[in-house]
Image 1 (cartoon, rainbow, N blue to C red):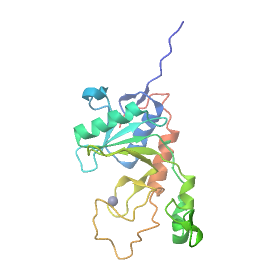
Image 2: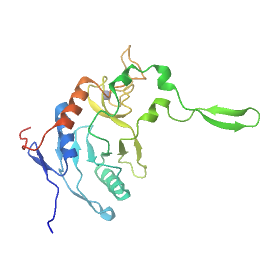
Image 3: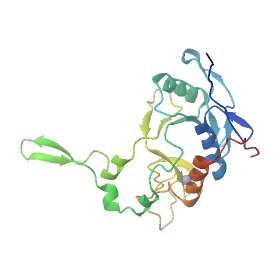
Length: 229
Ligand SMILES: [Zn+2]
């Protein structure tokens, strides 16, 4: 019986294990995000060995491991990523969303009312009866599921999934991952916000250069062996 093995995808002088990884490399290149593919393997003690997919923004304050998955990571994969982050002092993003716009560009027109419109949770209070409580997500958020696990280098923190979207930050001019693409506040800018700055809603997930990068990533053809970088 013939054995089958996945066809490696060639791009920029690398042989990627999956097409989705190569699509992310195209995405990063289109945006000028520096990346290295499988730069280093690690022995993680009890967690085993690990060869992370990408190191993006190497040697900068934005340096981060970027692990590409087709689906939710397994418990073992999350534990490895935790050990990797603690051992290297860098965040690890396990991104399982598609190489595609995570939400329509039209969200940028959202009103503050819609942005804040939460689904009430009703609780019974003897003196009042059913009373609405607003602790949950806003109604519009329900449409957009999580895209990634973000794992910090701090030991003991528990990773959680969130709708992390690549975001074009108007404050620092860089492309970073932010929840729901909100750029009301930038960790690299501090509190000196411009006068006309809006805290929220402030979507930065679908600027022209991000749209161009998703289009380039998802439509890239690798069959004929792209070269150069
Ligand atoms: Zn920024």
